[in-house]
Length: 392
Ligand SMILES: Cc1ncc(COP(=O)(O)O)c(C=O)c1O
Image 1: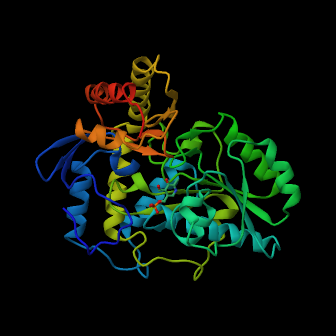
Image 2: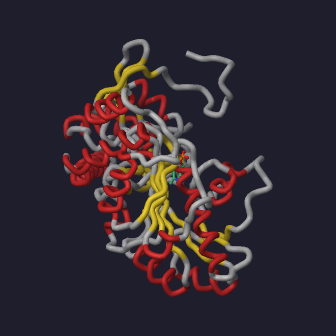
């Protein structure tokens, strides 16, 4: 199904999807697909989860929206729950990942000005992806995302990802840096996983320098890697963490959480969002966070991810064009030694939804509720396609 009335930002659509249940999606022709993408790390609880459907329908029938001039019980409950789950102190709610990141960048600037820095600068990483608004695309490390949208927003400096040693020289050369913003696993950038010690070392370095440590967990958050937030694997507490995607399991919501002094930076009049944290979105997110907890989905993400990883490692052990299989929990990348975008339609034709990012990395972001049998089916469909893959 197509129309000339939509801006062509996404290119040709692969299918018209009309229904979802658990780890399965159906198109308008009645074809069924096993979903190993979850709407790009969004539907961690699968499609049409009854807890989300119930929360949304119940809330929509009493109050959808009222503005942030008024207290919203679900927003209060969600903030408390997220802080309890994360060890953070305060939350600002927006509607997307980019918007959560905008809040973080604004907080970094408030922090910089508080320290007397006139041109506060946020250190961001090569190959990063933080969103498509002007500030977040300027923070992203991909020319593809930035090209055509110059002039970029000032106030960013760049460092290599997963390279602690480079930071001292960068800090010496740029006294305006007041925060470091990083995805703990680079998602769009190709499921790049940093060394286990990276976040601990960043925490130490940022504390020494008086920089805010700000983590973009828009993709890694909400249970996907086996903890509610990825940083919880390393035992650190960041100053700021952003999330979105899986937070509302498909209902748009984003959150910027802060800890300690950073949690006091935003004051009345500093920031806002008409829809941010509205009753409907918070009802969905509250149901999602509660379900993740009640159904032990963080643990499930680890078990499921390990099963998929082991399955692919066994099936693709001797395939010369497979460079690396990596990831954490339900965030898995299979890097091929050449561009492989055509694997997406090839998998669709076999009834499987995957994604290819960074040209040559097959990205799997399955719902955490996927069964073992379904996971084995993902491997059974995809591994032969990868084995037989020649060239795009
Ligand atoms: C790490 C990360 N940050 C930010 C974003 C932007 O989120 P949104 O598309 O909801 O604005 C994404 C989206 O892919 C992301 O993966």
